[in-house]
Image 1: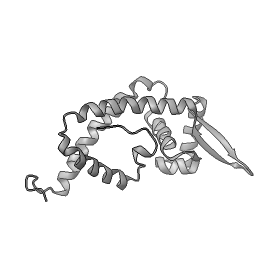
Image 2 (image 1 turned 30 degrees about the vertical axis):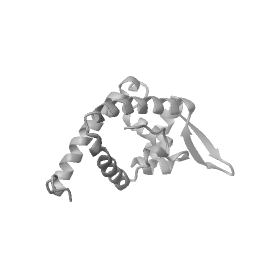
Image 3 (image 1 turned 30 degrees about the horizontal axis):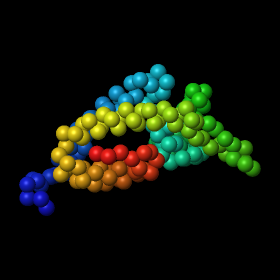
Image 4 (image 1 turned 90 degrees about the vertical axis):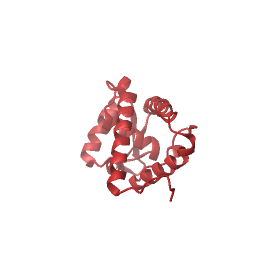
Length: 160
C-alpha cells in the first residue's frame, strides 16, 4: 500500500465514482449537443453498442441496453428511418433480423466519440502523468465490472 494514500472505505470509493460519473455525464451531454436533434441519448447508446459489439439481433441489442425487445424494436425502427442503422434478415430464417450501423451511423458515433475524446484529453492534462497508469487500471476494473468492451477493441486508440 502506498504510505501517502490514506485508507479508503467503500463509501469513499462510491463517492469518488459518483463524482467522476457526473463529470463524464457532463462531457457526454456536451459531446451529443450538436447531434441532439438527430439522436437521443438512448439511441446513441444503441449505436455505441453496435459499434463496439458488431451486428446483432434485436433481442441481443435489447439485452445490452437493458430494455425489452419491444422497446429495442421501436428504437431500431426510428434509427432505420434516420438511416443510422440497417436491418438484414438472416438467410433461411426471415424472422431473424440483425441490425448494424450504417455508414451514416458509424460517422455519427465517430464524430461524437472524437468530441468526447478531445474534451477528456483536455481534462486529463491536469492529472499528473505519474497517476495516469493507476487511473487507467482503476477505470479498467470498473469497465470490466460493467461488462463493457475495451475502447481499443472498437475505435481508434489515443495517447494520454
